Length: 382
Image (cartoon, rainbow, N blue to C red):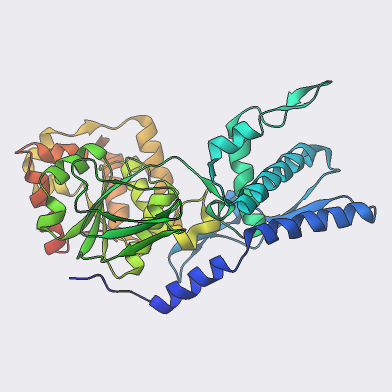
């Protein structure tokens, strides 16, 4: 079964819009405005949407987190903002060069390019830690209305895929076809940028299954679960990086149902919610990385009632686990689902949690049956 295209017109118009943004011109416009302010004696500044929890809203209609309308100015002459202003402009300058040269680097590579002294008589670097530069890259994305991938910035690869899908990767002026059904035990390593110069073709699958842990992904891959079930098998290897989230969204837009399989604890469940609704930190690109149609397969606390052997394999939840579960109950986009209230409250009351690895208890291949049965019987959470 070939994946449906979903809304091809919408996808096409989105791709066209991204390509027409001309990142180098956007950066030049920003620089021109700053120089104009200086020439007329005004404090140089730029405006960005406020990236704080108070300015993150849940879009009920579309089902994802996004930034609100609150904005803030960054001004060079404001003592508390001058350093961050300078650092942001330094990042913009480097990115402009990368785009003009059509060369890419990682966010780590950018940090090292800007880790130098401000001068012989100044005992301070432009950046001393990457923790300083990363959030300013995000500020620049918001200010310019671009994604870092369009600024020729990538992150470390994180996530693996196997299944009936072929990929055309244009790399080094060469088109390379990658058959994800022939990647053996390693699978296809998901890059941080799955939009530019990558095309998904011949997608023949019924659904996507996202497995939290690489160990369980390897177990399912060894069983050729993706082949038997005609699905696409993905592991984000823990919390999903934005490249993996973007890939999941793209597959969803092709008409493929997305099911997520994690541990039965607040951390595993939160991995699901960042895939489904996006995250507070990345609310500024929520429409691109969230997959509102995703469904949660398990593991659930309710599985303890259905599979008796699991009751012997629970783990005591820590105070940190319980606190995180309570925080999730306070999120409006989670709290509105009664099923999730039941799951979280049961964990808090019992002070127990359950790892997905426990499903290998009866036999190693039991996890295959667990996933297949739940999808067949539509036993999943919203």
